[in-house]
Image 1 (cartoon, rainbow, N blue to C red):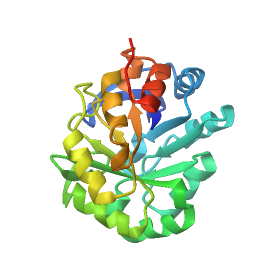
Image 2: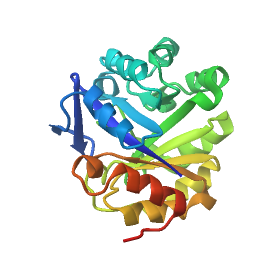
Image 3: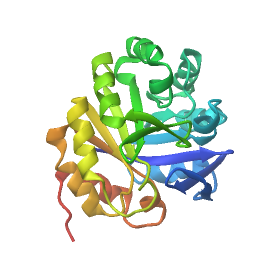
Length: 246
């Protein structure tokens, strides 16, 4: 299982927020580049970068920051935030994203998802963010009438190779995992799943590693790393062997 340390970028700053609420935004590093520098030094295999401005408005504002990170380091990047048309998807790829992440468009423009599957294949992931089992869009500010498990099934039929599943209600809280809904959406999808939301300890990562049989292939970690709950090196080790050692 791969650990994806997160860099969320808002108005040019490296930030974190709680439960998808923009009112809780707080800066966690001197800059996105400095955040990346630290994470790469600690052994990051991938970086998970989100343009929060783009997530909320549909217009990415931080592609230059992503490009700077991609040019500086050899680490692979999965990135998204505001990808709601084909040209914007191409812009993220050209900025250096090895895997582009699409969210709102999965609800608003299913045809686009099919085009992106054809274009990017394994270089595409769809982010399924949910509150109480219902999909959220527009930077987590809107809750739809679509069930996450139903969207997962549709994405599987479309040929999407990877989904990122987040229970927005616990994202950034460090309170632990939502394993029940994760297993449900993983069963519905049947492909590779990356988990995000509530990770606060190495024990959480070990529990997720045991869901490999459900297609769990990765975990996104943000606030816990920035607060020093554990190191990225330890998280990577636990993700690989599934055990927490003293």
